[in-house]
Structures are given as C-alpha cells and as structure tokens.
Image (cartoon, rainbow, N blue to C red):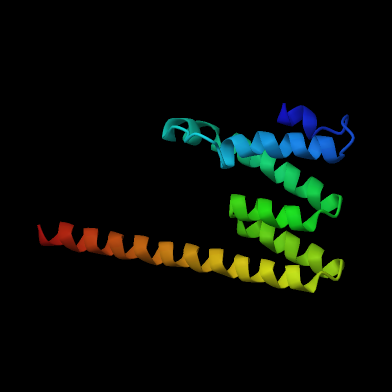
Length: 130
C-alpha cells in the first residue's frame, strides 16, 4: 500500500498524506504493542517508506510534519537535511530545532560508542586475568 501511495503515479494531496500517516502510525505508534519479532522483521522496510514520505514532505514544503516524522524515526541525517531545507525557506526557528535534535542524537551515539568501548575493554581485561 505504501509503495503505491508513495509512487509517482499518485498525486500527493491531503488524502494521500493522511493514508500514508495512518499506515506508518500502525508501526511507529501502534494502538496495541507489536511483537519484538515483528518490529525486527519489518523495521528496515517501514523505515525506507518513512524516509520516502519524509522527502515527499520536504518537496511539498510540509516542514513541520517532516520534523515530527524525523522525531519518530530519530535519524540524524533527516534532521540535517531538514535543517538546510528550513534555512533555505527562512524557517530559522525550525532550523534551530533540527540542529539541536541532530546534536542530541550525535551525543547519544557517541555515548553508546564509549559504553561499548568500555565494555570491550573490561571483557578483554577479564579474559586476560583468567
């Protein structure tokens, strides 16, 4: 369904936008929790559709909706793209919000890398002690 709605054969309008949002909400904000197995199995496919929708929103100047979708996806590259798009359209407040979210995600990723390095170091030390 999403593939068809995001195709070039369909004219992007409010109805199409709502259908796409409802479809993505089934995965990102389900009414009932999804099984971990289901999330793991379909997350990459759904993420690709969400990204395609994100770029459709940018193309159609729906910057606030694009921001909310980027928050749901939590991908720093989307905030970076939206940042520059916002600057081009003189949406400085939104650009600043994107910049902050980009750096928040970057800091989280760096902290995760540090934790992983520490865990590896501890494991190596433990192995050497044995």
